Length: 135
Image 1: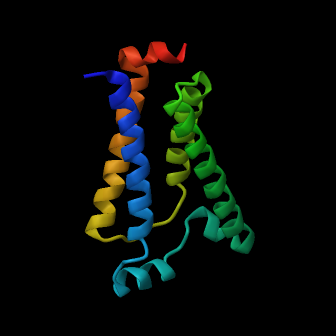
Image 2: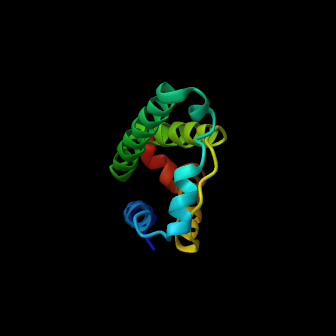
């Protein structure tokens, strides 16, 4: 099978799962919604209103860079490889500072699939012949 086609299909599946995960957030049980409304937002919550605004701004910026990196990866642009890895690392580090949130089993499964696909993309980028397309 053509590795380029598999790589591009991984990116398309990842985007579809992101859309599905976003939609699934709106269909959670009342207990999960109540928990999330009362949950703290980690370090951002401790800084008050400014912290919550800062956390939201960081999340939006990271999301924009994430989608840009996926587009660049799809087009085999060298900068996309670097950007994807940087966004992955930064979002992982920021995840340590955010608070707890609840989700249903479907949302949790989608989250695990998203992380697995991110890992698969990184594996493709560094350990398969696809890496030569980015030179």
